[in-house]
Structure formats: structure tokens, C-alpha cells
Image (tube, rainbow, N blue to C red; front, side):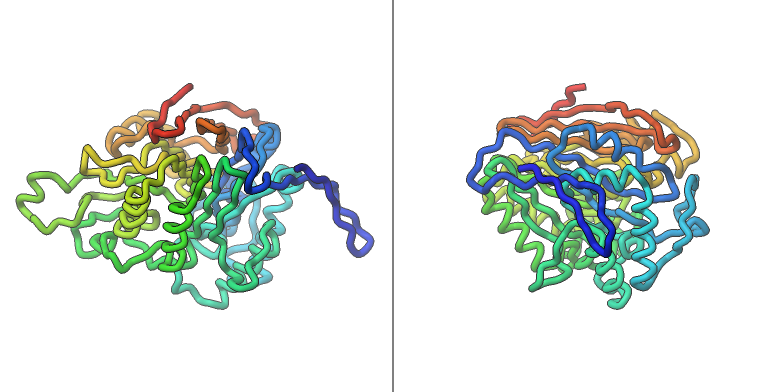
Length: 412
């Protein structure tokens, strides 16, 4: 149901906002249409993508994290082009983090999105600082978390105030399961890493966790207990393997029978590739309990990837457990900014090297639209020029997944 509202306080009156509620748990809605966004660095470009998202008739906006970045305009880290000025560099206290959110909310398109769309939000790492983990300074974490809760449309759980993982039901159509890959995780593996080296082998350590034990068991039980037609995992970091060199084959196993499973060169130790034993545990649980019709919506990596999530990338007979759609950033630097060049051939090269991928785009910015119906999930990737505040929108690609099969079909 749709609602219109406004606030009055201290003699001031807010603009009129719009939101909507979810269908009742026993309802059988025909569709859920979700706008998927992540990774918006203020000075890197304009948040024009939100203006186009507002025209998409979505029921819900899903933000998968990196809503703010700790870097300021003078930071030497991760800079590239700077179109706007961010004077707040590496905040560590509450006032600093509040200043970040105030600055980001000066963008009119981001403000309009909050005004007119309900949002399901999950943080990633930059809401505190790049690649932080459970060993972060507790005072800084408390300041960053408080600022997030003050500015995002989410009420904290009174029994566990920093908990964000949760299930959102859309009638019997879909369970949206949001997971937190930041506050409970062990320190990342080095990146890039070879998983047969001493440093890289930590990726296979069964004691290491990205989710934390409590959240991991919650995720397994929630997915297994779901009776919805679809399970949609809001997953801030890439789940499918991104292995660039395969070191797990007959020759290498003959030389070293004790090789860890799926040995190889991996690009990123902060995503699920750096926590492979835990990933295998979760995927095995889904297979053992017959949990199918799983769609994964992902952010973080500032690029676009589409592919199946296999139980074992080295077993040709392994089941595909889920279909994953990784969306690019709203504005945060893509490979085009990192390389200071746009090399389209890289897309096909990476797709061929990295495995069974349906789509790779390393360069564009924008958002995704995921439409879930009773028998199919349709995903569209939209690109928007971040250098032009009046830019239009273009569809890069569309995909379809039919209920009962994890196979992904590119439809345009």
C-alpha cells in the first residue's frame, strides 16, 4: 500500500514524501520490482542514476553499501577524477561521519530517491573505512554506526543494536535476505592472492569467517526454511568465484596431492573468495536441503558481472546453486578511471579467463532493475554518464532466469 507523508518540527515542514508497505505474509503478489544500487563516491561524479531510477516504477530500492566514502577530496587514495569537493577526510568521530552524510544528501537526485522510494539498506565497508573488520577501533565503529542509523531508513534492533542482517518478505513471492559482510568478518586475505602460498592459504581456513558464526547459522536456517517462490540474497560482495589462474588440475594434484580445493590465483581477498570454506559450507547446506530458485544481487566491485554460483568450480558435474547479478557503481571509480582508458576488449578477456560468466562490463556506472514474478526473474543493467548531471540512461543488457532452473539467459 502506498503512503504519502511529511514531517513538521521546530516550525519547519519537510517536503512531502512517498513510501509503500509490503504485501501481507499470506498474500500472493504478482511481482516485486527492485532498483539495485551501490558504491557512490561524492566527488567522483553526479548521482544522476537516482533520477532515472525514480522513473522505473520500482517497489523498493535496495542499497548494497558504500553509501559514503571516508576519503576527502585531498586524499591521495582512490581518487581519479574529482568533479565535486568533499572536505571531510577520513572521519573518526560522530561529527565527522555526520558531516559526510550531510554532504552526500546535498545531491538533489539522492535526496529525491529517499523522498519518493522505500529503501532496504545494507552497509559495506566504506561506511567506516576501507576493508575494516571486526578488529576495528570500537569507538570509531560506534560513531560510524550511529551516523548510519541516524541517516538511513532503518530502525535498530533494541536487543542487538548493530545487527543489520534480516529477512524481508514480499508475500509468498520472494524472501529478500540481507547479509552483513563487514562487522563480523576476519581480516581479509591479501589481494590478489595465490591460494597455495602461505599468505593466500588463509582463504581455505575453515576457522575464518566473513559472516560470523551467528549470522552464518541464521543465513543457513533462513534460506532452508523459506517457503517463498524465490529467495533473493542481498549480498554486498561477489559470491561467485573470480579465479584468474586455475591451479587445481590433474597435473598440479599429482605434484601436490594436498593442494587446497579450487587452488588458484584470485583477484580479491575481501570478497567471498577470501573465505572459501565458509562459502562452501553455505552452498553445500543449500544443496543438501534442496533450496533452489536463489537469486543473488551484489555490489562492491564497481563493475558488472553475471553468472551462476557453482558448488565446486572444478567439478563439471557440480550443481549451480544460485544465479548472481553484480551491479556496477553509482559513481565510484571503475576500471576506466583506474586505467585512465576504456579498453572494451578487457570485458571479453576477463570473461573468458574468469570462468563461466554470462556478462562482464568493467567500465560503466549505473544501476540495476530486478523484476521478480511468479515464474521468472528479469534483470536489466542501466548505464548513466557520471560526468554529466543531465545525462540520459541506456540499457546495457537484460537477463532472465526461469523458476526451477538457475540458468541465466541473456535477452538483449
